[in-house]
Image 1 (cartoon, rainbow, N blue to C red):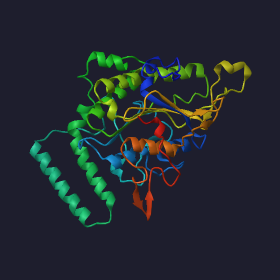
Image 2: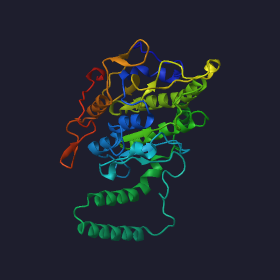
Image 3: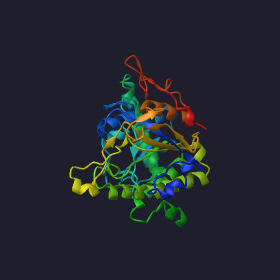
Image 4: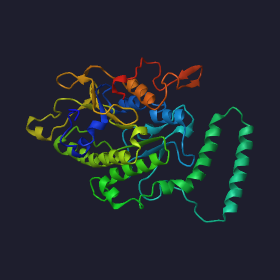
Length: 364
């Protein structure tokens, strides 16, 4: 309907593309994964800063006091993306706002359930004693704010024993829903299961949920003819199912869906041997790439900005990472200039002190 171009490798997503805005003029400032991912996640190219998920949890808090505000659903094989757990670190924000990884199968977290059973009154007495000791310890150290975060994390862990397992239990979902997400099929089971869990967590008031693919499956330096279709199959059906599910449950208007990465690919083949060009790939392309956004005030069917005629660099209506961050916060009801933490006499922000603008053209 909107005339937006979609790859033939994404047949399921193409049915939902009119719900998305595509920013085709994104650019990053570094061609290597590590600094580019730091930039995408935190606004700066080096570690130690809060990720935008932590800023969102800090700004909005949590609707569900029995689950973390920020949950990470990474690949169950532990093949984490570049920068590993730093992708959901809270930096200089209190640790309470750090992303909490949960597992899609089995117990959501290690050591979630007690090793032995005991009467509820005994458990309550132990927790009350621990809380009293924690308060005494804190009162004797009034200038240690990290103690507050630690105590609140322990309290949250105790409450999670009741709610976390139920939130991630898909056994009560219908077979039609499981089939829609591709659960039970080798190619889509892992990501489909996590997309379904994302919907269940959204329903329970979790503020920010981040899903990661297996390792670097989109990093197609070689054999792109096989590796790119495999990456698309991994996510196409599950993401489309999530869009369908959010829409039919009335959650689309209040949920912001983001799909993208730290950069795209260059518009030329990568390969040293001309005889092996059928096994060629494409190198990193940070100077011009696309990201998708839907829901929560986004104008669906919008194509914004463009690269040059070769697809090498953004030239029209360029959107920086800090512009993107400012727009995300705006869509979630926050002002990027007013969301800050006072630290060492500075107002630390997600957009830092860079020039930032909200991309109003993609807003409904």
